[in-house]
Image (cartoon, rainbow, N blue to C red; front, side, top):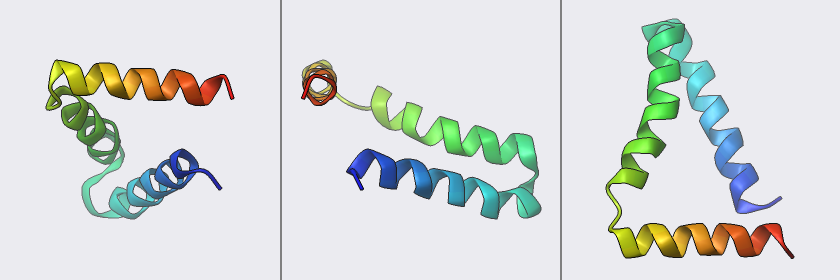
Length: 60
């Protein structure tokens, strides 16, 4: 399994665990918001490197 697949599975698991405690919409906000905030916290050079690596993995 690739690292990206493991991250997606972990995010889904966290979302399913949070639903009973905080509700569907808030858990969806957490699952989608945390990666978005982490991406926006990167420097522009780190974002470029991340996009470049992601594109290279697509063209293996």
